[in-house]
View 1 (cartoon, helix red, strand yellow):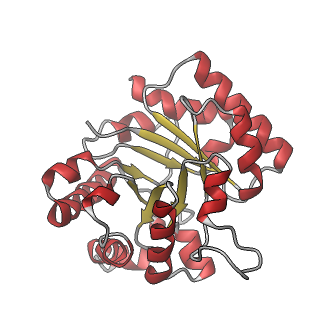
View 2 (cartoon, one colour):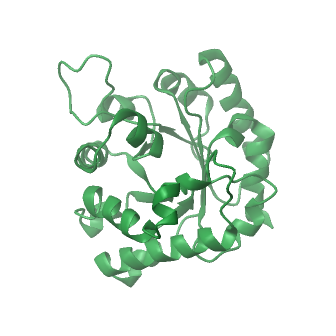
Length: 253
């Protein structure tokens, strides 16, 4: 049975002291009331080592929001997969729409990042999704397949065991438009079908696929009830412990 996961992506929020306090609050809540799913918090680089010290990673695992596409060397300002792993982190988010849009990350760059992350023992939360223009042109399937083809579909079935996919409907984030649970389920079912085409039905059935749209405590039960939605990649709602726990608790319902 595939793993259910709720992952928080803090993005560029919380200074170090605030981040430690938030991580401790989330951890203490979930240690006291064990979650019915896997939980990951993905923090800015500067938080990782300190946050690792306050987490019980049997309950709340730790991830980074990115890593470099180079192993080591004269790359000022970059943080390698090996560095991320050395902090105690277990996961890294790669391919997020903000990294693609604002920092020009291409399929080839992401392919290198994925390989380095896996080589250093990290699990990858790999994001894919289409823009409003692409959705309106009904190119969403084509776009998502190209993103997976370009960066992760070269992996072996063994390597694939350390991949979690996250679908981001970029067109429904900050546009005033909303993805329905049926639209989310339709896309995740499609993604699972192309994983099956590549790796076989058994691998596809074992692949965790998250929904990365606007997920909150109020709509999480409806989303998580869909057969192909295995959890969420959560942005703003992961910055308040009670809101984040409300989403995690949807797996109890």
